[in-house]
Image (tube, rainbow, N blue to C red; front, side):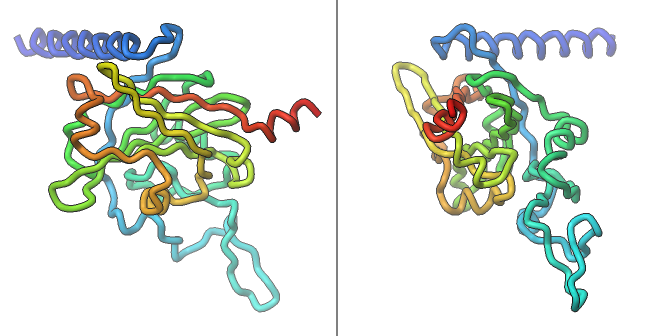
Length: 241
C-alpha cells in the first residue's frame, strides 16, 4: 500500500510538472521556445557571509610579493549559487563545471528560453537558478525572493555572465513577463559573476517585483519569465571585422 501511494504521488508530480510546462508554452507566443521548470533553493547559509572574502587564501588565489603580502586574485570568484552553503572558489573557466557537477544546475541552449519558477509561495530567502548557454558564452539567471521589510517579500531577477565585466558589456538581455494581456519587460546589460548578487540587488540593477505584482503574473504558484540574450552592436561590428 505504501509503495502504491509513493508511486501515485510520483505520477501526480509528473502530471503537475507537465501541466506547468504546457502552461508556460501557451503564455509565450513562440511555441519553439525551450521551457525550463526550475525548483526553488531555500536559504542554506548565512546571508551576511555571501560577499565576504575568505580569511584563508589558497595558493591558487594569491601570489607573493617582495614583502610577502598576500594579494587577492580579481579573476577568482566564489560559488555563484548565492544561497548554497558552498565554500568553493575558482577561476571563471571552471565555474560552469562546478555549477553542473556540484549543484546539478541545468544548462539550457539557445538565445531564447522560458524560465518557469515553481513554488513562489516558499518563505524568503529563496533562489531559482538556471544556466543559459548561447552566443558562445554562459550566463546565470538568478531569481531571488527576499524580504525588504519583515512580512513584505520582493522578487529580484538578474542575469550574470560567467565572464569578466568587460565581456559582459558586449551583451544585452531581456526578461519578459506576459499573462492575461499584461506584459512587463526589463532590458539591461548582464553583470559579471565576479560581482556579488547581494550588491546587484542592493543597487537595484535588476528586475524588481513586489508580492502583488508577482502574483499578478504568476499562474498556480509558478512564474514564467521569457529570457532573450543578444550581442551588443559593438560586439556585432567586431565579429564582422
